Length: 232
Picture 1 (cartoon, rainbow, N blue to C red):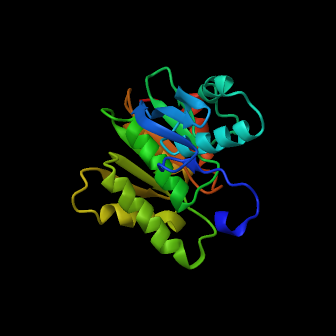
Picture 2: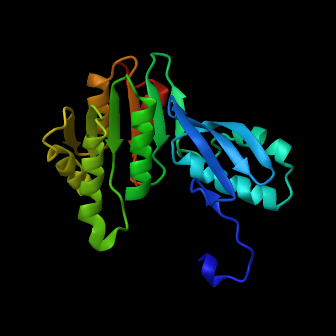
Picture 3: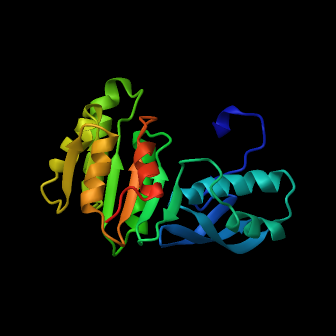
């Protein structure tokens, strides 16, 4: 797109030629820290929002802020103060019993599923991980392949337990189950209530649970987790 515009172009990302970029990215409990590098200087940033993919998002925000006149000396602090404001989008909360829930249930597509699953793996390092995944809509001819790819990635990332919600999402279950080297388990359940029942039986203190789907009311599972209906 840069070659097609007469406007001034500012590149943001992790490539060496980006004007606004991140170096030395480190993940701690699923949240990224990095050194922000810009023409105005360098500064450390520690993001308060979960997911490795938020590095790129924050760099784009930084580039816009600098172009709009935010002083560089205020930028790193502003980035570190970013918090989730949209409901059900990478909203991470801890229950009293030690279960961590990643609520990303507002919507889903294969790319956002992949980002959320990687966030689950990073947040749950050294802990038992559970993914509750629902249907992804509007994929057209790519629907089956897209769901299968998500299932395979779930297995390849080593998620311990996969709960697939609803028959339309069945290829997620099939994709995960086809990975012979996976040491985890997958189950296909009929609806959100059945998913809650699985969690009620199986959740243990210290588990990390991701809930994600494409406006398929997968958030009913989150509401049960938040209300304490699901208890180990």
